[in-house]
Structure formats: structure tokens, C-alpha cells
Image (cartoon, one colour):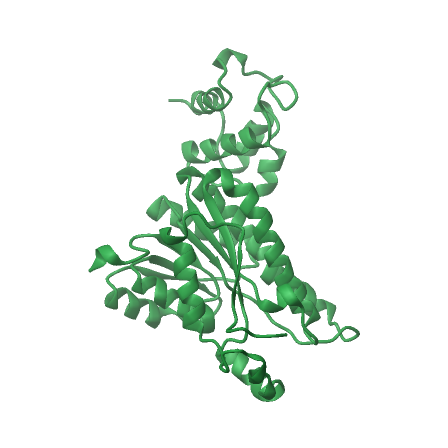
Length: 80
Length: 251
């Protein structure tokens, strides 16, 4: 499975949305249940999926579907 | 025999294991069947102890050497535990610095260093450890505070401030983590007969034993016993608590 598909699958599971809903508008404020709890759950599932550990500063900055792609790049995961 | 051990196969991380209370905790944990990651700063200082305890108690006691104020090293330790065991059951934030000064004589460089070790490093490790614990929906975090953090004492303003902070952060973390079934408690030892304390005692507090109701100093192993209890399932409904281990010391 491509990284982008794995990335989308985690989002879709955590936020309980269809993958087609995931776009550049999917962020804090727009996504219905995006709060600090789901943000932690999202990061935790991404860590498991990609076998990484995300720093606290990056967890705090993980505020959108697109931001996440840039953050993942810091951990040498290209979301393509 | 193993079925009766209180921490059988629980994966634990303990800081400040080179001597005193930390060393006693590692011994007791191993005795109770725990798999222990023991952290110290001095390279190779725990090698012999780990080997001996692993063999004697048929478990794994693994040494890791780094300064806990190095957040990257802490993260690497957690990743190592995750990769090797997939789980972390108990964190003991034991490592600490101590200083003695009255108001008016506070050395701020020392004070900041003490906060880095006693408070900031503990928060960082709690944050990292709880990420693993959340996944398994269980865990026990034990922070070592001090009676002076609760009561205050003359001549230890900085140290008591850090230990008071440990009590406060324990209580708050217990609330944050309750929904993940992660327990967070703190021990508040009084005067414990460690090498470090004995030296200080001889120099400054020889008459203080009379302030202890039990009439004797506490033993590091007695603090470790309380850690075993808080780490085990016997304390499954206890969180956010400060447990004094002071033999009725009055300060």
C-alpha cells in the first residue's frame, strides 16, 4: 500500500470520515471532531502505522491533513 | 514461584538507578519479576548489577546510560522499549538533584538545573511513556517527591520547590490520564538512609533523628516496597495520591 493510502486510512479511521473528505480544508475548525483528544489519537495511530515517534512540538503543530504531510516528512516519511 | 510475583513480566523504566533509592527500586522490581530498563548517567555503572539481578531473578534488567535532561535520548529509550516489548507498564521518575540553601543564598544556575532534572525531565518522560501506555489502556507512573515538597523546610527552598512541583504535576497528570486507565502517584519520602543523605546528615543534621517518630532513618528498600505496590495491580484503583514514607517525621 502507498504511504498516501496508509495516511488516509488512519485519518479516515480516527475521524470516521470517507477518504474523499480528506483534502486541504480538512483541519482544526473544519473537521467536526478534531480536538486535542482526536489529535493525540491521530498521532498515536500514525506512529504505529509508520513506526515512528513524533515529538511533542510536532504533535502540537499537527493541525491539518496537509500540515501532517509536512510533519511526516521530518520523520523521513514521504506521503505520496 | 513466579506466578506469585507482583510485577511478573511488567515492563518498567526507572531513572536514577546508580545508587540509593533508584538502585533499591531496580532490585525490588527485578525480584518481583519485572523487566527493568534502568537508567543512569555514568557509563557502565549498572552493568554488573543488571547482570546479577537478571540471573538471580530470571528476568531482564537492562541498563541505559544517558542524561535524562536530554530529551532526544529519552525519546530513543522509549522507542527502544516500544520496539523490543511493544509496551511499557511502569515509569518511575526517581532521578533527582538536591541542594541546600536559604532564601537570600539561592544559586539560580543550580536552581534551574534542579528544575530541569526534577521537574522538566519528569514531565517529558511522563509525556513519552504515557503515549505507549495509552495504546494499551493501562500503566502506572510513580514520581518520587519528598516530604519537604509537601511541608516545606528551612534551608532547602529550591529543592522543596521542585518537589512541590512534582506533587502538583502528579495530581494534574493523574487527571489527564485517568481516561486511559493510567495511574499517576507520588511518593514523599522523609529522611532515607542513602549514601548521599548520610553524608549530609553527618555534616548538618545529626540531631534530626529525634524528629522521626520511628526513631530511625528510613531505608531505600522501604521506598522501593511502596513503588512495587504502586506499580502492581494491587493498587489498581489508586491514582493522584501522595504517599508519605517518613516514619512519622515532623518538619
